[in-house]
Structure formats: C-alpha cells, structure tokens
Length: 226
Image (cartoon, rainbow, N blue to C red; front, side, top):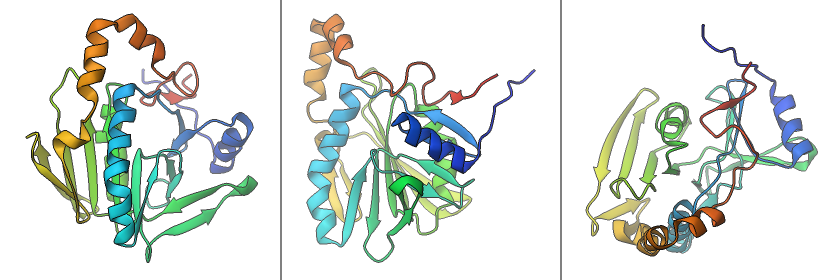
C-alpha cells in the first residue's frame, strides 16, 4: 500500500518556517526539508555568482541565491528555494507574506546544482513546476557529483508542456546565460582541489560537510510521512 502524505495549508507552511527559523519547500500541500549542502555544491554556486552577477546587472537582471524564497502560483501554489534564480527588472514581482516575509515571482531563468539527494526531485517535480511559470525561459541543471561526468543540462521551455534539452560536457564549451557567457571548466573551478581532499583525507572532508537544515528527511523525502 502506498504511503499517505499529510498535506498542510500555505498558512501552516509559512507558520512552520516562522516558528522554526528554517527553510522548507512547499509543493501541492507537501513540505520538504531542505537538503544539506556540500563543498562541491557551494563551490559551483560561488563560481556562477562570481561570473554572472555583474554581467546580468548590466542587462537589467538580478540573480539571487537559494536563501531567497520563490513563489510559483501556477504550479500547485509552490514555494521553492532554487539554488540560483534570475529576474529581469521589468518582470520581477515581490510578494509580501505574513510576519514580514516575502517571495519573488516570475523568474526568467533558474539554475539547480544536482546532487545524489536532490537529482530526481530537481529533474522531475521541480522541472515540471518551473515549466509552468509564466515568462520562464531556461532551466539549467549542473551535476556536482564528482563520481559522475562534469556536465550541464539546459532545458529551453517552449510551452508549459514542451521543452528542448541540450547536454554540455566539453570543458571549454561556452554556456550562454541570458547573454552572459561562462565556460564549463569555469563552473567547476576549484573542484579538483576538493576531489584531492576527498582522496587524501576523506574523514576530514566528511566532517566539514554542512548538515541538512534539519536532521531526518532530505529534499526527496516529504515531511509528514505516516
């Protein structure tokens, strides 16, 4: 028999974040605890921010990290925390929420860094959700698992139900992000040093990995299983 997931209202979800001071994602009434991050994940996000922030700002766009909440009312009224999300000045909408909180709406581009704990969620439910966002053009998924190939998947959304996907894995390939270009090897800069640390001192590296926001469920596991 399939497990039953306890669903909660949006108000209950927002109250949960306020009461705990932690971040959760909310989709179709189901709450998911945020997965713990890794050195590889943070290095990739840092490289992208370093290369893209100024270029995007010159184009009238702004890039935000996974600490900023995004609301997608077109997709089961979801509240999500993409690793990086981009908004252009004439499209960005800021929604006021209870307790002084806020969420952004209508991104034009979203980037998620894939890991073993979030890969299926990012490539499945989240991708389906992002595709329904009005004005959403591109979804980038970047592999962070050093045991896998260094590759980027680019989904260009044609409609709410159709997209084209390109896979890029050549180190010198240029990736265009709203007119701002970055090479694949620049996205992965610093990861060889992390891999060396893993090989030389795996116990030490494990000790400095950041834990999940809360102990227990990871992002692929909804909170509230009965």
